[in-house]
Image 1 (tube, rainbow, N blue to C red):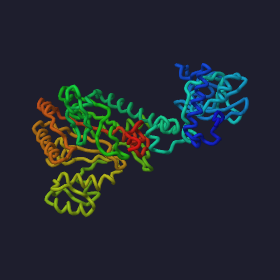
Image 2: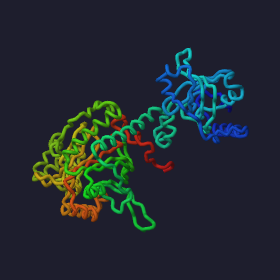
Image 3: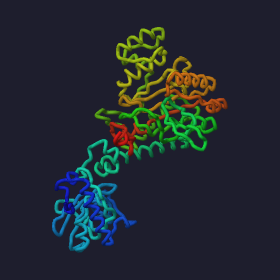
Image 4: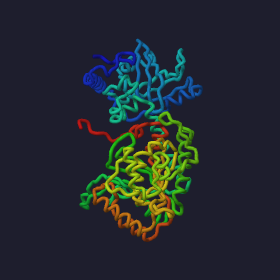
Length: 502
């Protein structure tokens, strides 16, 4: 099989046997090496221009010589003249190859190039008779040989499992995928720009911990050989960041990876990115205000508007957002009024009729949260702040003065997805110790997501934590929202995948 003259209008390479194609391309590579033209020995190419810049600013480039490099993604050989398309980091542009310009040897070499080869070209910018901006190639270099064929004539890769496993091919085959990650980069930069502008200091805290704390989640466990102890990949940076507030910082934040040994679905990946921030002398109302301002700022910076569409639904990120207590949200969407704790047995029976499952001997607070989790979240198109969570599910949040069963905590929801979590931080060391002890009891009863006792954190609180507001935002979910991506895997360059054969 001679694939040297394959082009995008011919039968696609993927229809041929991959091993046969690999064999042919390796033979071509061997011929190049034997002729002293090993492409892998080239260490540099002076790439001075991009396809997008030339196309967007054609009047400035017409008739001028440019230098481009990228992947050959189409090729049409027509005797002494040929056309192709070069794909670089910004887009693609047509190339025109002429035998009497390149010379016999270079042109014959070009005819043997394959779709997917990485090339460098120099040439003159012009427009074809059909009006397509192109480059008439005067110099040509093969910079790297592609030994495997691009999928489906490089026009698209639709197998999602293969897309996630081989993101490098996905990025070549699906140009819109790259745009998602360009927006992701803008979002992360905008978050930092906003927080820096608000006077927050970016810090770094340990990823390997001797205690898994700061959230209710199952950790990944590893082992430190020198110390001969088990350690935990962090599930949250919260307890370290609050130690810094104790130490005198008044505004801190950290953006980075967290690791939770839990299920995988369109909203969850075992490792994910969050930003957590803590500010002294404010409360959860202050965190709501910051959330609204941050989302407006980031949306404008990253996508140019606060009026977006997510999975067909219009969403306005413009402040102010709706604010509702958890008790009122449950009553609004289910009719169950949890404000009267004496009616708990009756409320549980009504909720069970609606399909809610409760743990044995469930408390009032956990019953309220369970009903909210199973029946209410699905209605929260938002943006909406749901406030005043029960103490039982909020071991690090300050109690409400008006109702000791509840805490000054909120989560906010957009399109029925929880996007972030915030507290007026608990700064009473005695109360904190008691809540840790209750969490320890939950662990002893088999809840491996309950938090561990952290004596050093309690000691830090005993030195004095000022009134503090804290906020955590799921960066991946924010990227999903602003790029209209359904699955978290679409916004992670390399999501966690089950090994082949498993």
